[in-house]
Amino acid sequence: MKKITKLLTVFTFLAAAFSAQQSWAQGGPFPNQIIIGSGGDYSLPNNKVTFYAYSFTSNKVTAFDSVPGRFTKAAVVSNDTAYITADSVLYRYYIGLGDTGVNKQTIKKIDSVILPGINEMKIYNNYLIVSRWYPATDKLVQIYDKSSLKLLYNDTHATNQANGILINEDTAYIAIQNDTFGMLEEISLSQSTPKFVKLIKLDTTSKDLQDIFTYRGNIYGLSYYFANSYDNIVTYNLLSGKASSKMMDTADNGVYFYSGNIYADFGKGLQAYNITTQAVGSPISTIDYVACVPENDEEYPDYFYLIKSNFITNDTVFIVTPSGKIINHFVVGKSSQALASQWTDIGDGIKPTTSLNQHITLYPNPSNNKINIQYPANEALITISDITGRTVYSENKTGINSGATIDVSGMANGVYIVHLVSESGVADVKFIKE
View 1 (cartoon, helix red, strand yellow):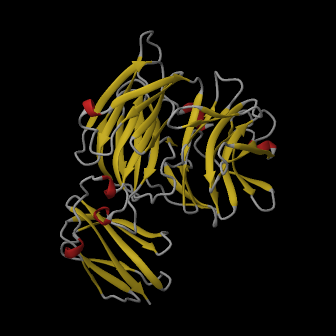
View 2 (cartoon, helix red, strand yellow):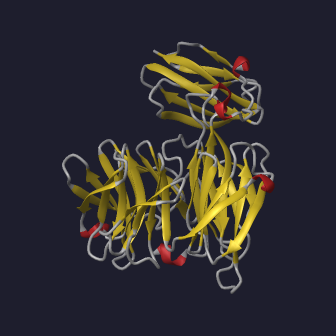
């Protein structure tokens, strides 16, 4: 399969976004910084893993620590704290809530614990949920108090490898890899301590179950099984308990899911697979190999963060719009695989991006056919969302200081939010489709 032959070019992608219903200046969440781990050169006996912080405000990247290790695998951010791995050690850093990425003196290590084999991490309330793989051979799912790192849940059911983590309301589902069939481990998070509920047995096509997502009462997952040369999109219905699968050629180390679409490498680069229509869209970016670090799953994917790595030279991180336009890039160390983003509310005292709401002109409003937009910028990313937050339009427009026209005739009647992001600021405006 192509996945075996493409291991020298790895793209790691994190989908993150700006809220389509609130501008940052109006108190909505906004991206503050990205934390990145670069593994360096695995073969060197004294190799070190380097941690970086990229600032959205200044567009600068800073290496804030370097620790012994051969690789880095996972990262997650909770408020002002970053959790990131290097080899068999989990590190915690205070990263602040401000623009700290340009000043490494403001990022400080809190502590570290030995925890071999961390595969993925997720935060839910005060829980740090961890899935594990080699060299761990048991206790493959663990849950810690994120503040004290006290162990609260120690799995005794998974016997091979634990992969993707899904949080659905107050329940966690963990993808369990098995030599015979795939499984989902269900854990209740509604009590004072996490409680095992059950193991959900799937079928033989899901034996290498990896990333999992939920959408409209179903859990969807990707299973990559090299031995039999097939990949599958697995569906498990939470109500009926029935599982099914569809063969699909996909990337083997991660995807991103948003609003009914699975974003992955479907053979032609980064593409979206629509679960309802079962159709694969045109390539967003014609890259060879894409893997996703799913962070801020509930956000709107206005940008993808792509790490290009050949494991030999330093990596480049590209910030890419959904239309495939590269709007920025920066360089980090070799073999970067751990990446997480920090989102901040205005209430935390951070200076917001400039709001240009008073300068945007949209007409006619209401409209049943087309809307015209004028905005004081030559170029901006324009996103339109309905009142549920579902994105119905997203495109990078140029020349909008002299006017841009958008066809809305195919949209259902109702209230929509137009959100614009440009170098000079952001703006939101409502319009009515009738």
